[in-house]
Length: 196
Image (cartoon, rainbow, N blue to C red; front, side, top):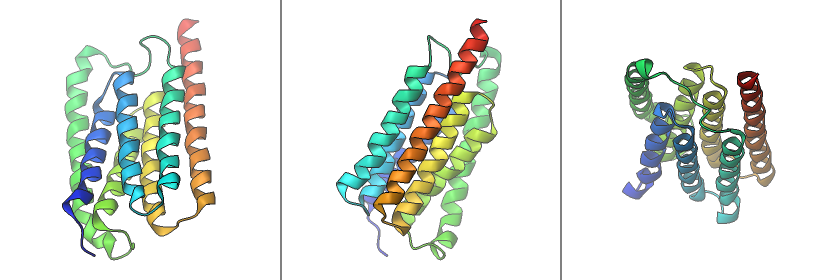
């Protein structure tokens, strides 16, 4: 299957947004990176699904970001001390680049197994890998929820190319919003624990 150079634009956007999501200590910038990530997911899914159905992914992702952003009070959210920030950022950056490189290297082999064009296979793989990395590196509720949403959006990209079901798209949207609501609940519990 022949791919255009424009097909790699959402892959680049996904890579940048997921790296920002992995590195960012400010919760506002993390929500912005999440919204950019869902724009790239929309762009990738748009090549397979109709605009209305692909827009469901975009709107659901933005709603999840809005729910998470509304549940954070003040400057709470992602807390990293200044001493640890440079060491942790370097470590996270190197791991993120390794995930992206790994996905680029194994995508030709996975392309033999899954009927997905290579750029979108790379985009979904980057999202899944970065989501797992985000989940594995932290115990902060916001970062864990952002990692779960990133992982799920990578799965949604793969699944969009395999199955074009409206009902499954609805279920995945419900799961995305459920994860965001669970994250909002955990953030509220964390904020109550801090204030007491």
